[in-house]
Length: 246
Image 1 (tube, rainbow, N blue to C red):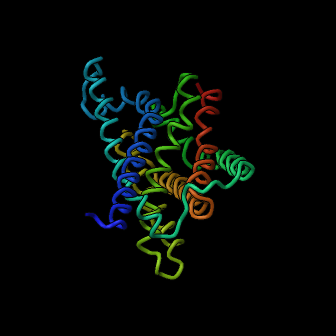
Image 2 (cartoon, one colour):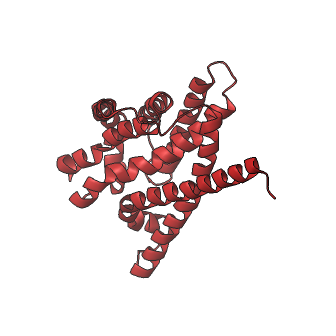
Image 3 (cartoon, rainbow, N blue to C red):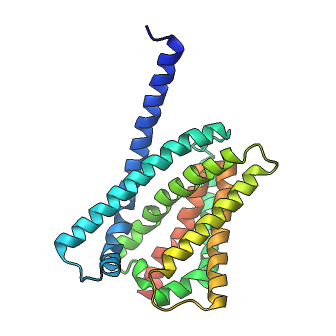
């Protein structure tokens, strides 16, 4: 017979894998509006062809499958890493605090516009929704999967790896913020035809870096819902920009 402690550990592992699939699947579903809206532009950009209904649907489904696969892996890694790092990512910080963090995110919108978004609105307007339905869904569609991937997965892993180093969690947050700033820079610059000027590049990377840094600090202090509330507040910019510019 299997020893009792092994059976309990096996049952716990199966439950964690099940929960990981559920969380990743929910995040994929939430991401659909953003992916659907941007599929036409990126299909043409990456394939060099005008989108046709069949090709566009295949491209859209492929993006969803890739996203789901990546989320499943990172959620399972994050589950282990956060426990080993001594973090409680899904502890409830309280509604009042979440509302304050949401407001903090909204307050950051002017900074994002000044540093980043005024450039993207001119050079890559396709990433912003021009229809009200998408603008209403974009904030959650953008923030939830990204926070799950960046903070719960990568920041949790970095906090575990650097946990025994003095100031390891702060260092982990800085490293993850810098890593995803570089990724965002690469992702944007490969999609535009007009290169940024030097000062524009500095402004863009500063805006993105400080957003990641703040979200990471809130994750380490208040958990996933804290960083999500902040990012949701920042991503309300999509709705604001819809009314201002489209």
